[in-house]
Length: 399
Image (cartoon, rainbow, N blue to C red; front, side, top):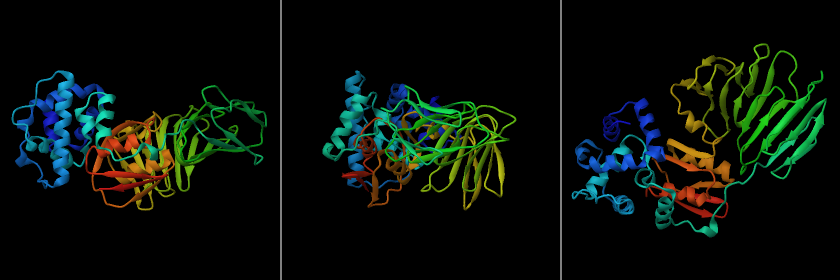
């Protein structure tokens, strides 16, 4: 990342594509030292006159003080020189104001700290969340497998080996937790449904044709135990990522209500959660055709189709790292509003969320999914523009 691009970002002069690239760079922990050096060298190049005017209320005073303390503390720990002599609140204000101005609130810990120990120390100082109210992340996939005869197999990490046999097909779960279908297909088509509740880790499914499916929490997939005929058709609710085995003679179809995705062999993600504004199909490689019963569009890698009652649109240059963060064990927000963020928290931690105040900011964060919910919320609280309270299984969102 060059210095000119960073200067353009903090003075709201970069293009949308350049902005997304810079955000990804800022979120990479390996760049922490470079970011801090750049900020130290460019206090005085960020003109306050070029930035939006932010009211100096009590909350903003706390924010400037927190940023200042964080910088000075980390400089002492790393042996760096002290901040420039003109390091008054206006210098810190310029950094925060520029970030807010471009529609993204960069969490203080992402810019100014270099390791997880520093992050945890700072978070513990500013959070009002009590450990006694904490909620741990899920530790396993808690799936249910509904078989063709109507019976149900309950799965957790303690259930391995052969689960069932249907029409010459063996269903088993291996030592790494994958559910695998194998064997000789019969003429009769039998359907199975794999479901994950809220508060579950994702699970991986190997279909009879070798296609791989990762299923997210609060999601389900219905599929045949073996593929026969002229197509391979499955239906989903919630979110799933597919790596489809190529078979030009038997297209692979994914459906959800009116949404239909048609592929031959490719990698893509489908998000159909009912509480989201639209169904989204994101293509990582290959080609897919996405339709809603009226319109069909072909996607290229990096494109994302959004299908809703309001219409059909295609977004270019999608941040696929953000889309796939759930599969890779992370929360990743590249400029998301708090309601979108909390929808993910609801599903993953199996909690209820109550909004007591409107919080009109967007957030950038990359956080492990292996942390307690309080640790996640603490990272957002570092901005001092949002606060949370945990009451049992409910999270209350406040200014």
